[in-house]
Length: 168
Image 1 (cartoon, rainbow, N blue to C red):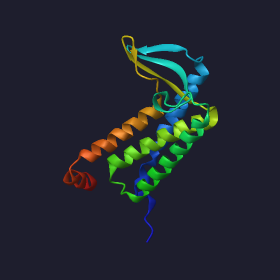
Image 2: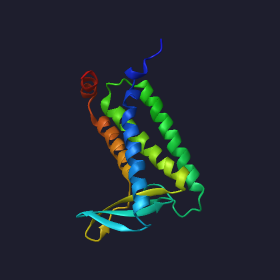
Image 3: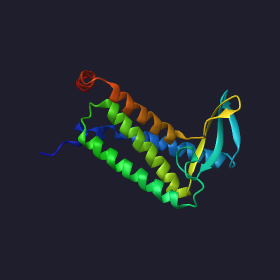
Image 4: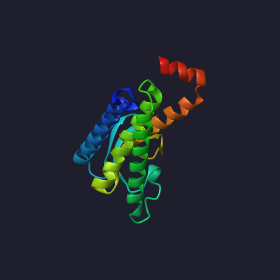
């Protein structure tokens, strides 16, 4: 018998869509209101800083000549498909894991869209303390990191806690 889609983790895909819309919207706003490398202070220790990332997280492989664009696009696509399959196989009541997967899917698709449309990932959030700056990132990167943290946290839950959360 087929599983009704709304009883699977795919019920949580709305979260991936929200992440994707916010990510693409903020990037479009930055590109239309900022010049490349322009900075605007938002609050103490946070700036908007328009940057283009040719690599992966923290500009990994950014200076390798362009082939990495397609490698990272393929990796993002494979991860999104794998997580969609995992969501399909999970129960919708597994909130933490399904939210984590949806956050990662939304972030992966946001950065994938950048790579395919612009050839680079648009980054704009600059967090700093005094003169030390964290690598510039975007909403998609944040969603991916939060999703990864949720997966790790879920791994630390005892099996009895996990079973109780699934029933609740």
